[in-house]
Each structure stands twice: as C-alpha cells, then as structure tokens.
Image (cartoon, rainbow, N blue to C red; front, top):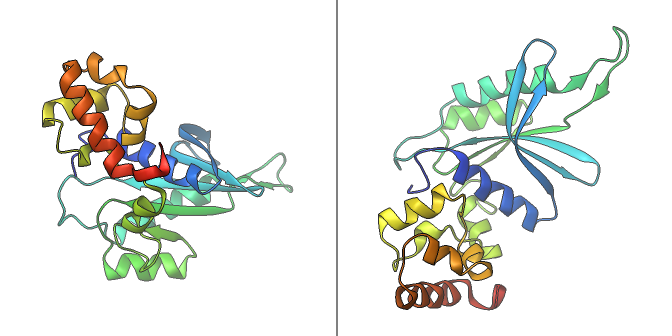
Length: 201
C-alpha cells in the first residue's frame, strides 16, 4: 500500500517479479494502436510470446478492481494486438494481456477476464501464484516492508526509483544519499539481509 502515490514503483515491482521468472521486460512503452496511441505499463517477452500487462495500483486495501478494469484493458489490447502492414495482412504484436493489482478483483472482473482469456494476478489471486506467493518465492520484497526506515525515507528512495530491498544490497550508498547516517544504514542493510535470506547474499 505504501508504494504510491505514483504507479511507477508498482510497475517496477511487477516487472522484477516477471524478470525473476525469465521474462524480458520494459516499463512504460508507447505503442501505436489501430485507432490511438497507448502506453503499456509493462511489456514482457518469453519464448517468443509478447505480453501486454496493465498494473492497477491502489493505495487502500479495500479498493478492488471491478469488471470495468478488465473490460477497458481488453479494449486497449484489441487496439494494439495486431500490426497491419496492409489492409489484408496482419502480424500479431501481443499474444496475451494480463492485469496485475496489489489488491483484489471483484467476482465479475474474474468472470469477464476468464471469458476473454485474460490473465489476472492480485494479492492472493490466483490461489497459487498471487503477488503474495510470488513475492515470497523470489524474495522480491519492496523496501516499504522495512521497519528500520521511516515513511519519509521510504518515499525518498521510491523517488530515486529504488523499489526492492535487494537493490539496497547492491547499492548501499543509496541509503546515505537518502539522508541516513552510516550507523542507521548498517541497521537497514542488516534487516534487508535477514529478510531476503540467502537469496541475495
């Protein structure tokens, strides 16, 4: 919930989870559709298949993504799905469309997405493979989970486009740039190592 107020940290978080699963990813890609231009939150490629991913970030836990979300995103997908070199020929540009949220989906949203063969990922949806499971599986914890950082320090790091705890292990000086003393930075790094376990040591 603390990843806001902009959607970028959540998009980066989703991108990193996909990269851990072997996808090549890009964030904030502009694509010309058949009718209008679209910004794709995350573009992911694996085994020759290209996935269009829309990230729906909510800063309140009770905010669910309702049926309008997959309906709207499906219409955008249909506009960018194909590239038309000529009137009679087309090439598939995107093979799949996913919606990822940090909260939950309404039942109608799930039904519509299932009917349209869209993939949904929420905090605990699907039952195995939701964001919570993926975060734990790959030890990709957002820095907002750290208790040794103040809310203001977390926000400063997010503004520096740092999202994951593991990034702090690779670039410890970022904590000093965010205004922490060396002693406090050491405490933060210890918490990161305890949280991430051996995955990044």
